[in-house]
View 1 (tube, helix red, strand yellow):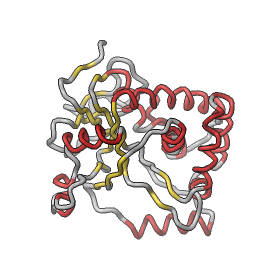
View 2: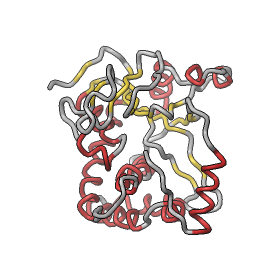
View 3: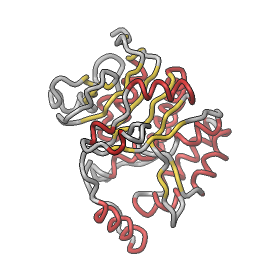
Length: 270
């Protein structure tokens, strides 16, 4: 399959595994992630098992199978990834107050303008306040996965280890695997990220993991973006995250406190 030229300056994939309302802006491309595992589940969406694909890895790679598909199959000046339940918000303060959440979503033109100015647009940094990035992950998932990732970086690209260590000690990070990038930066990031994850998957024993736990490569990958940006001197703009659904903050806070103080890991499905 040849790379797809969509005749758009901006292509932002929206990772989804079920039918869902999508932004009307032509820059957005709904992508059925894990199409190889659940064919036909998202009629009208672009399946991520066409062309060059790692769709069959979706049970562990989550939205990254959509990211890989965009990297290997789409030509556009600006490329990016968001999620059906998390989108990048408009930089326009007036639009941020719109009642309909989809009216608060950044347009393709807004993203193109920011990318032209900065190179990269990210979801606003997530702050943990009372614990480090490493501690937060180890309280909720398995910190040894971060240790294994550091080992892979040390062996494959040791220049990234100091930036990784700084992030682990930090109390904030850019997460969610959500961004828009100039095409050359998007391709360069993916060309670095996926070999790191492939090697990491060889070093972590996933046998016996639940379906939720098995998604660890997708979660670890979220923390690789900041070191890559730092080492490569890439600037960025930030936008708020827009959720089409109400966020259950009481449950999130309860789960966070239980993980931190009671040692209870998260138990939920994707």
